[in-house]
Image (tube, rainbow, N blue to C red; front, side, top):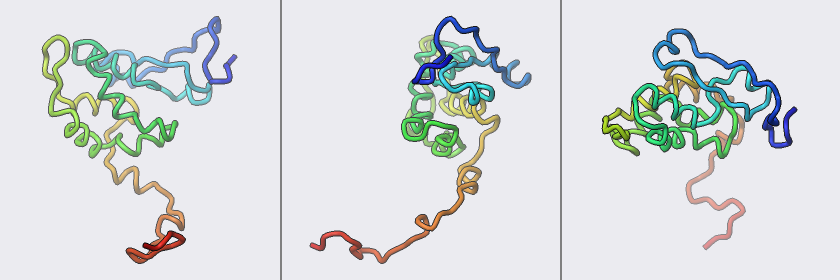
Length: 164
């Protein structure tokens, strides 16, 4: 039974874990699951929270999940505005990985003193969510145009705005 917030109440039997592809699992180990989404969404969910991505990063690169949490939070920040898989169109692509490098630097140093490339961390997150690293065109080419998207007006023209 789910609460009004979508969380499964305690005492319910746990759901079976959703597993990564065998090749990816050999590389990073089993992927965590979260029960904070609807049952329908959960069937196809591998990672639903940045904490599980951070745990996966710590298993793969060493250190503590807190070493990686800011990167995963940044990559998934668009969930604040659109909380389903479509939020990924904003940063879950090759261009988003390079934007992450510009924001966080080429490497981070985990709590074991190891330099870990930011690109590897962000690509790991995207692979877990998408199964591949798309490019921005992969996302944008699937947007269905609506009339308001192509509407243009003369630069400087006032439409219903007060003139100065």
